[in-house]
Length: 289
Ligand SMILES: [Zn+2]
Image (cartoon, rainbow, N blue to C red; front, side):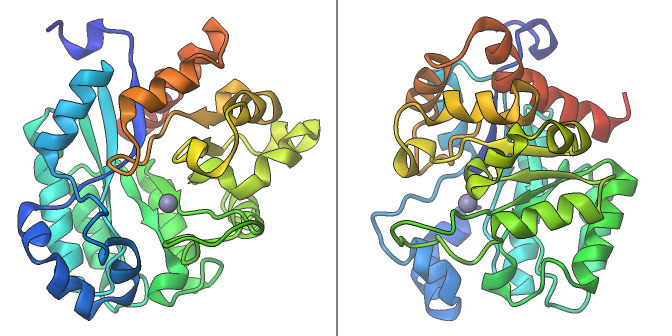
């Protein structure tokens, strides 16, 4: 395989990993954590580890991924998860970048955040403030945004559409309006609104909004489970190709299939940005290049 920097970057900016021991303990964890139970209490919900991800990346031809875990309530589980994500990043020479987990409702989260940044985390996510009981527009969140801005780190927010059917895990994150407020208050921080930003991109059709909020990205995670088959093309039309990130939500969605569907909707230049160029800008900002 050629060295990563010689390949055209093809990055999946939204995947989830668990350390093997959390997979073994999933039912005990579900008994202790209601939000985790909502998403992973069902044995049919897959939990993937690094080997699963690398195999999926290989099948899809991906050169990189941003890997998050789950927004556990327990500090112990968060720490176990962060150890694993950081080890995955190191082992893969950062083909897999770590988005570490945090619980801002727990005292001492800042120490964990600083530890993760010092160990090279790309950022934090997938943030689910309502599941953990903290205010995305409160003081702790403000400290997180400042910390991220100083480190050039990115924040991935679970952003859910305020209408439509309910499903496990839909709630627990932030609303599109909260994503907008975060972007406005913390314009030096890079934010990713997961799941097409819950619909916020509609307003990116306003030139003053699109020009002003270049610190916000929208990912395509689970796009075709939530929206129709033309949704990513319309997302790019509304938000601009510079604001959209390929993200599958692996292992919920197979990256190869997702990539094929997204790619089929994009012109060459938009594809270059959405499928890897924009994610590379996020990495470069963090690494200070
Ligand atoms: Zn999500």
